[in-house]
Length: 138
Image (cartoon, rainbow, N blue to C red):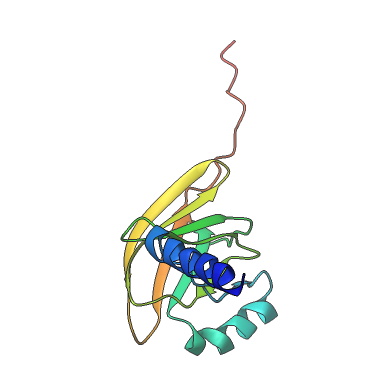
């Protein structure tokens, strides 16, 4: 019986080996809704190699942006909702595609994350236009 369990364990290891790699967890933090929270994230930047900033073109920061990061091999490495305008992530060096979605509008960037240093990727959405009443012509 012990031999049968050993054979099953070996088969399971071989199956896992040939079906693909387990995805490693990507360390990340997000936030920065207040000036104090942005300062706290600034103090943590040296531990990460990617910084994503979400804002309107006017400069107003945004939160609740859905972020998806895929590797060059089209493997999903991170999918999350930003808790503030800043997301810091620690990725393996390489090329990634970042998609950021806010209110059904998706912006996409392809970036190369360095082995050392911090890459900043800004995502800027058009400001929501204010709807003004049309002037009367009568």
